[in-house]
Image (cartoon, rainbow, N blue to C red; front, side):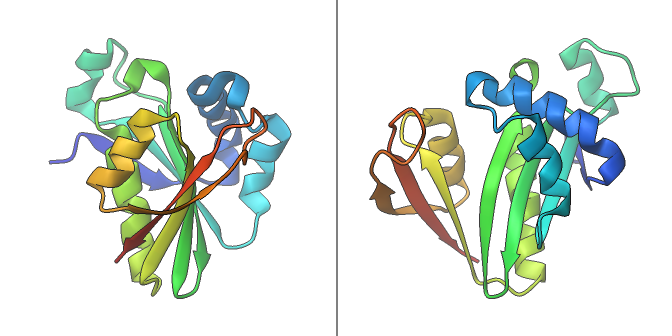
Amino acid sequence: MKRWRIWRAEPADEDDLVRIEAAAFGEKSWGENNVRESFVAPRVTILLAAPRQRMVQTLGAGSNQPPVGFAMWRDLGPEAEILTVGVIPEAARKGAGTELLSACLEGAKMRGANKVYLEVDQGNKAALALYGRAGFQQISVRRAYYRNGADAVVMECAL
């Protein structure tokens, strides 16, 4: 049994998504307006994750858990793009990111994608490890891609 409950976000989930994204990324957050606009972006799917009942004690919270993680991916026909995956610090490294990423890859495959791409800050070792475990391979680097001047590692995964 999976440890995380994953579902497709609806517009009513906007506040939760804004909260999670801000907590997960801090000063690197996309910002509230950009996060809210994700709900109307074409071909974008947003997934949320909350702990299943047996995880509740691990996180020290009540039984009706709000989401603690999210993922966004874009359907591009024969290809897909992972836009972002984030988990609040209190729930990090407990498997939510892995299950969210798996759900994105499965959704892309079901819609006919045969490759998935993403880019990640070269300094984000946890994300690089997550994507590597999922089968992503580095295909290039975009120099000084992010606002802070960091390089982006471009990765690809065959489905």
